[in-house]
Image (cartoon, rainbow, N blue to C red):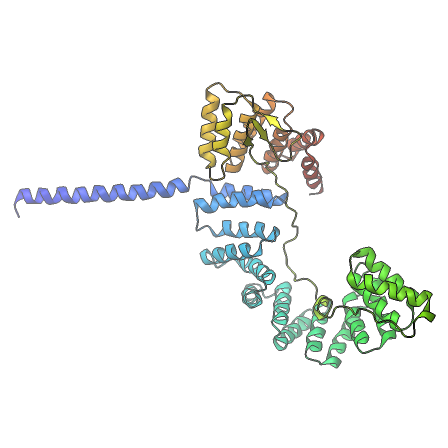
Length: 469
């Protein structure tokens, strides 16, 4: 090959190589641009927000982590945890599916998805999740119990009964398993076995209101009203806060002609549930029989206890292993929204005005839902560099820094807002929250007291939560 041809070939190869390098560099820049968010810090900030029951703010942090690294299983799991506490079960189940897709080796992902599927009435899927859990955690009593209840809901009473036999054999003092076992027998009309399991539980412990209730309902359905009265009296003795027990006992007492005590039971029901239809209908009938029995040729007919709403399934306890707590209060107040020249802060003591009308356009551009926090901060800081020193400006910068997870910058911005306007209660509140997210409770407490004194009631609520925790 001629020398010039070789040089030409090298030049072409070099050109292609440079183009490939540029192309790869471009892809790398795109990826690193997305990854500029510190995902670990964002997840930690989200977890901290959830610790204070602020699931909405937590979701915002997890959104940023997922936007930066859409393959990060932990971020999907954390967001699902927040969504679960907000009762957004379909969204939580979807996020958990993604978390498991990216990392199928975390048993807690299956645990939470099982609970979400139960609330979404995807019982078969929940059975599959709990099967995975018991493979990894063979001593997890809750997983076996929840799987048995899912099988019960699927009307697979044989499989549910076998599961419950295993639970009772392994944990013989697990009271709720006996109750559900009895119920599986009653569902297939095996009354003797159902009562046997209830009596077995009561022989272990007589302080089980659900067991007395199941036995009482059976007696009520078969016309043994004395036994029903006795059983529901025991149920009330060990759980005086359940309206259904009083309602069923009232029905038994009415059938026995004990009208005044039936009225007393209906009064208990209405004290707990003032709009209870059955109690509202039956109480006057029982009272009429007690006061004017001569006016009645026969006993007027009562409304029966609803066999669908208060039937067998009402005896089942809640599924176990749930995440507790569903309170949701925003920790970070949202950025100001421009409305003419009035900038309103949600939850604030009073509307706050911006001193510079030109700033309104900046706020409009940075308050948009699709505005990127870092871009918004750059616009705001550039405007500040022109000599503008308004408390509202500093406050907005603090909100954007906080949303982005740069807490030290947020702290400085809220401090500047307080220096510019010592009456800006919202700035005290947000600065306190920033301290809490940095585990500086001693610095946060006086700021929360100050914000509460200035009219932000949520500050006192958060202070109470902090003291309890």
